Image (cartoon, rainbow, N blue to C red; front, side):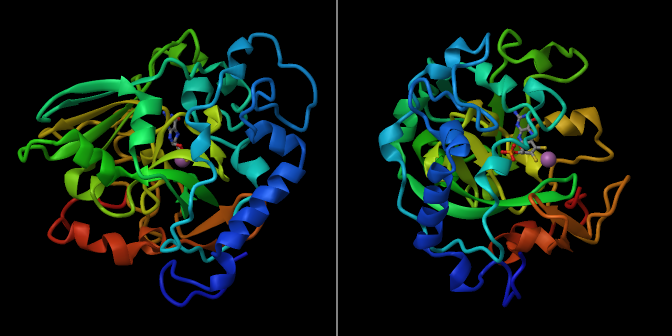
Length: 333
Ligand SMILES: Nc1nc2c(c(=O)[nH]1)N[C@H]1C(S)=C(S)[C@@H](COP(=O)(O)O)O[C@H]1N2
Ligand SMILES: [Mo]
């Protein structure tokens, strides 16, 4: 529900107290099925739809121990407030875009085939020293916090969720990029034996996304390792995924294995598929329609109500300045 806004996302305290998070977490755990889905305990295995018993065939890997479970729940960073209620966790974890597991929204079951151990992350390209390390080790080195963020999919649905994770700037500092680096490119795993969508050879796998260094070090750019106070479910991009809430959702690349620093602007996954519809910048703007539909309003998951979309998804105060002097670029698609 949209409460009346004062400015941008900085809104009534009712929507954004630590209590609201703990309450929703408790609701989630009390909900049984949804709790089991998010619960990371061996055997609980992210079962969907309130199903009780064993895991479906072919999902033997879903009982792996979660990544760095001791970090959850993490302290809430109260700087990031919402103007709307949190999305029902059941919906946020069962209505997904993750083409590696299929092009429909109902891939959460199929995504349980993703193996999270071992999961190595490589930081390379224009850095002082390339490094490959275990995702769990990387996450444990980072200052973990919780943030309430909105997500606006280019398809005009939206949600509001508590992510757990760390500022992308922390990873950039850890990586020690050369001053000549201009972009950070993030790449999803590639393994079609786990991700049947990757057998669809006409897609340019692996999924790749990129940010300018100014965007990557903006305070809002976040690497999410969990959601609703629990380690990240596979369907939402475990063990680590990007969250850049001022951009359309496709920029928020999931299940990252590589962070590469470069001076070349990458051609990103959706840009390569349909560059006239999905560009590099992809900043949210209600006044710039997608070639095939309006972006003026959005539907919050779990409602039939359409609410107005905001420039930069309501985060202009933090990010509008990043685009000064770039007005000639296709910033909003
Ligand atoms: N690797 C990968 N990352 C991805 C996608 C994808 O298909 N593959 N879909 C994107 C899109 S279009 C959206 S809207 C968000 C959805 O995130 P959610 O499923 O956690 O809501 O993930 C983004 N990240
Ligand atoms: Mo999306």
